[in-house]
Length: 178
Image 1: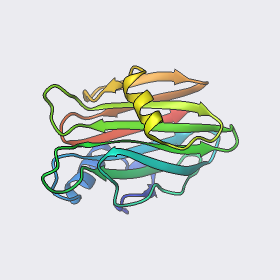
Image 2: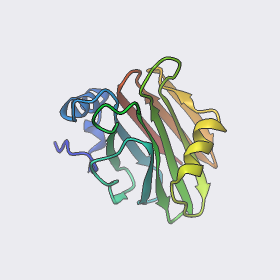
Image 3: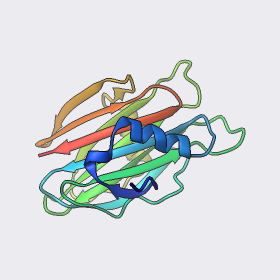
């Protein structure tokens, strides 16, 4: 099984244990995240871009996520004595629906008073991830806390189900269905 970030992998093999193994293979930094996003919609997805409020990714977003496919994406805080976490948003475009899936994540540098947070939003038309999108999803909506629990919401006719672990080595698993 391919464990390289920025790839598409078989959905059956993508467990939380798999994501934790990916995290262990990443650089030795305190703030890092492994994200899987399952496409259970009738549409193929095309990567638009990723925006980082802090931190970075070593790989680009997988270019395409086909119907029934799962993308794996990792990111980490900037190496060195930098007091930042890894926070950002990335987007995929669903041409058949003319909608964009946006995934926001936040793994802070310090857990006093912050926690891990995540959210998914569906936008009309093709939309690039940027600071405005990140700030809107982080501050002006009701993101989900990374509390090891499953959360579900409906957005523009799509069901979003996801979970995010606590702590600086964070695993996040999402499924989007129609």
